[in-house]
Image (cartoon, rainbow, N blue to C red):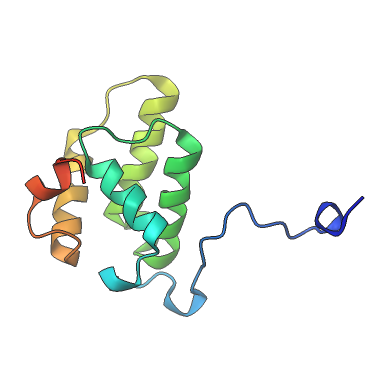
Amino acid sequence: MNEKQERDDVAIDPIPVDVSKSLSDEVDPSEIADEIDSLTRALASDKPPTNPLVVLKAARWWYIHGKGGTDPAFRWAVEWTRHLATDAASDAEQFDAFLTYLVELGVADEQGALRTPQ
């Protein structure tokens, strides 16, 4: 058995967590990890990710670095995961709040820019 298999603290992905900025009301777009930025933009696009584990990766980052359980990006990622898991309609109001939040943060200048493929 190699060293990685013996460890109890195995990382599931390389996305860093900045504990000093956890549960902050202010997210600086320049500090969003590239992979999370890409996933977040994909969640806002016309063709969002369909792998719930990928979506939950983004949810985790936004929960830790944003407003916790009330963070609109976290809430939308969880809602989209619920949609993927159950095939139930997703909450359009949560999606609108998510897009508005990304514009307010400065991730994009307008909601329409988030909806088009990058």
